[in-house]
Image (cartoon, rainbow, N blue to C red; front, side, top):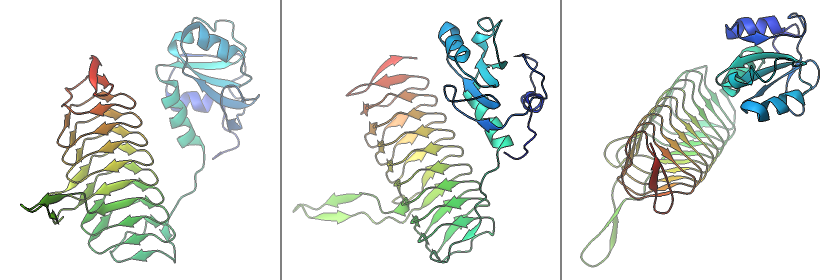
Length: 301
């Protein structure tokens, strides 16, 4: 941790809440973050489970301090630990970890990396990565090992691109002549990745044919995802492993794409939509709608 004297009072102060229940002195030192079932005395955990089920999980935990869902306030009146009650325990647990834990700060260029563009000093480029000419990378961005970023790509500030991902390769754009011969559509567009985007391992993002492929700020992309040419993804979207987004699709802000979703080309997904696990999306999806199935159909707004 950043400081071995982290206490319950410091965490409560950081969370800026008065909605807590304490059994011990608030100066009790805390040493480690741990899962609810494995935590021991002196450790911090969280419980997102609501109601009586959540109450049982918390009662069986040995953690000294637990961030609980607000619904547990009435369940833990005679609790044996120290609790703070919030609407989103997992979110606050993440914020506490980021604030109180030390993390490795990646910076610099590994000697095996090949860099053909000017890179800010605050950027980290990992082993055997290749950054082509005419690539822009923002401050404090981390590019892990074996990443290939092609020309005409732009990566924003505070981004993370994990190992073996390819950014800006040609998309699958072809046209047949009257004899059936296949001719490739030249890709002269690029990639625009905005700030605070995280891209997992083994992800392929194709550059645009004429205009850019765009990934909006705050979007998080899991491992093994394919994003085709000319796709536009909004802000704060989440795209889970094994999903495929075909060419020229448009995703609004805050869209959630569950694992193994396939979206056919030229589909529009409205903001706040949820695409359920394994869905095959062949029609546009309205804002604030959840769809699932093969083919995907709405189940609720």
